[in-house]
Image 1: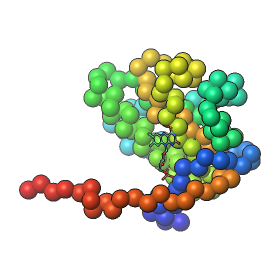
Image 2 (image 1 turned 135 degrees about the vertical axis):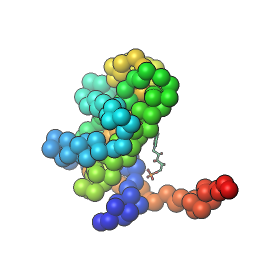
Image 3 (image 1 turned 60 degrees about the vertical axis):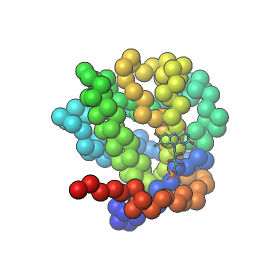
Image 4 (image 1 turned 90 degrees about the horizontal axis):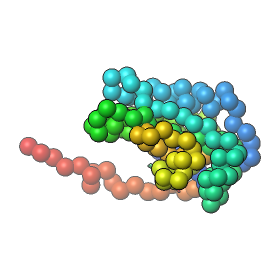
Length: 161
Ligand SMILES: Cc1cc2nc3c(=O)[nH]c(=O)nc-3n(C[C@H](O)[C@H](O)[C@H](O)COP(=O)(O)O)c2cc1C
């Protein structure tokens, strides 16, 4: 697949097969993700792999669709609000790289924002002043959701003289 095909065929998947994801595959997707742009090469991402106990404590409504792997993606603290925003932007790029690398390999993910809630931050053990970019269920899709159509991008473009 071309990179454009990979981008356009990725889906958020909410139901996974029980088939495991090998550690080697997971690490290869994370390693690819780490080529994300990041200011001053500060590489502000941190990954926390969540085990069964933590998953149960999070009480997610479907336990992340039965995903064999669940991880939290964190963005490191920064000296100023500006740098903190930059870190969040860089880790969001990391997240998209990760999703695309997994998708190219036939896997998929569920991006959940519940990790940012104060009680869930505590359960995950997020350091103070770190941001939670998301909690991701990762595995092989049991159901592939339909494409969600996008607004024509031309309607999002404006011009200034
Ligand atoms: C920052 C962010 C937070 C998200 N949080 C959730 C969430 O809490 N629950 C959920 O079901 N989907 C969540 N999603 C996934 C979106 O719902 C999904 O990307 C969107 O519906 C488009 O579908 P697609 O990814 O299949 O193209 C999140 C996505 C992003 C970028």
